[in-house]
Amino acid sequence: MSLSRRQFIRSSAQVTVAANLAIAGAAPVYSAPSSSANKTPIVSIKPESKALVFIMLDGGNDAFNMLVPSSNNHYQEYKKTRSNLALDQSELLSLSGFKDQDGRHFGLHPSMPEVKHLFEQNKLAFVANIGPMITPVNKSLFYSQSANLPLGLMSHSDQFKHWQTARPELRINRGWFGLLSDSLQASQASPRIPMNISLAGINIMQNGFQSGAYSITDEGSVGLVINEVPNQLNKLLLKNFEDSLNQSYSNDPFRQSYLSMTRQSQAQHQIFKEALEGSKMKTQFSNSELSQQLRKVAQSIKSAKALGHKQQTFFLRYIGWDHHDELLNNQGKMLKVLSKALGEFQQSLDELGLADQVVTFTGSDFGRTLTSNGNGTDHGWGGNTLVMGSQINGGRVFGQYPKLSLGKENPLDIGDGVLIPTLATDELYAELALWFGVEKNQLDLLFPNLKNFPAKQSKGSLKELIRA
Image (tube, rainbow, N blue to C red):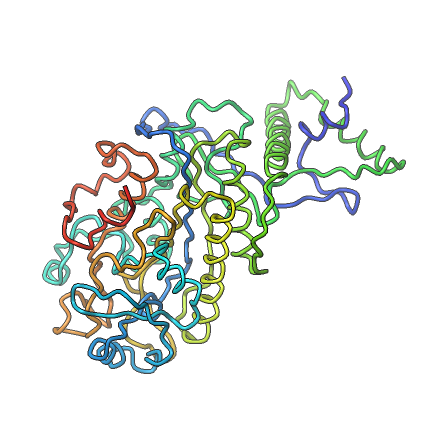
C-alpha cells in the first residue's frame, strides 16, 4: 500500500535530509513501561482549564541577592554579612506598599524591573526561605546529627531532583507533575499529546509511573517537514521514505518497535503543529531562549482544547546559576533575562485571555551561602522563590524572610550563612496542587511528607497565596 503525501506527513519517521527536509525541535520523550505501574497513586483531580508552569533555575540561584531587605537596619545587617557581594542600597528596586511582620521593606535586584511591576500589580509574590525538607529542622537537631535531612543535602544532583519529586528522603525518578498525569491521562489513547509538555527534554518532574512528557523546543514540536516543490528529487525522497515506512519486520521486533515509535512521533508532531497554527499573539518576546520558550508555552496553553487538554503542566530549565565566581556580573545578566521573560509571558497571557488559568513558579537547587567566597557564593539550603499569575495574592512576601546575620545571632545559620529553610517545598506545592484541582484529602498521595508540616493559619501563610 502506498501513502499519500498527507498520510505520509501523519505517519512517517523522524529524519533529517539535507536542505530538502527540515526538522524543528527535539525528539518527543516516551516513558518506558514501569514494572511498578500497579502502585500508581491515583489522585482525584477536578477537571478545570488550568496550567502550571515550572521554571527551574538550574544551578542554585543566590536568592538573597534577588530579594533584599531595604529598610535601613535590616539592610545594614545584609551588607555586613554579604560584604563585597552586597548590592548598593540606592540601586535596589523598591517593592513599595509591603512590609513583613518584622517591619522589613524589600527591594529587588536592579536587573528585575518587570518583576517589580508584576509585584506591584499584585500578579507576583515571593516565597521566602524555602527548600526541600522531610521534617522540620532546627540548629540543635542539625548539630546533634539527629535531624532527618534530605539525601545529598547541598548536592546539585540530589537537590535538583528533590525539587521535582517532593521526596527528599528518596532518590527516585518520578515527579509530582508525572503523578498528576498518571491520574488524568492513564487511559489516553495514542498518539494524543501528553498533558505534560517539556521545553527541557526528559525530566523527572513530569515523569510518572505510566506517563512522561512531550518534548518541544522554542520553535515547536519535532517532525518531518516535506518540501512541497514537485521536483524529481523531492519525489524520489518521498518515495524512499514511503517504502521505508511500509516495510514489515515481523521477525525483527526491535525494528518493528522503532518503526512504530517513529510513526507515532510524526503523528504527534502533526497534531501539535496543526493545533498551534491559529495561536497568534501581538506580544513581542525577546530573543533569549527562555523568552522564546515561554512564547511557545503561551501558544500551547491557548491551543489546549485543540490538543485535547483540560489541564496542562510545563517544565523549563534556565541553566547557569552556579555562581561560585563572578556572582554580581553573571547573576545580574541572568536575572535580567528571567525578569524580561516573566513580564512578556504574563503580558501574553493577559492578551490571550488566559491569565486566570495559569500559575508560574520558579525553583532552584538550593539557596547559597550568605558569606562570600571571594567573588561568589557556595552551596546552601534555604532560598527565596517566586510565584506569578492573576490568581496570586501578589504584592507580598510569604513565609518568614530570615535574619541575615551569622553565627549564634541567627537561629537558622548552620555555618557560612547556610540557612535552614522555614518552609518545605511540599507546603508550596500543596497550594499549587489545590489550585490545579487536586482534592484536599488527596494531597498526601502526592506529598507524603506534607503531614510533617502542620498547616499554618497565621497572616501571611501560604494558605493565602492563591485566591480561592
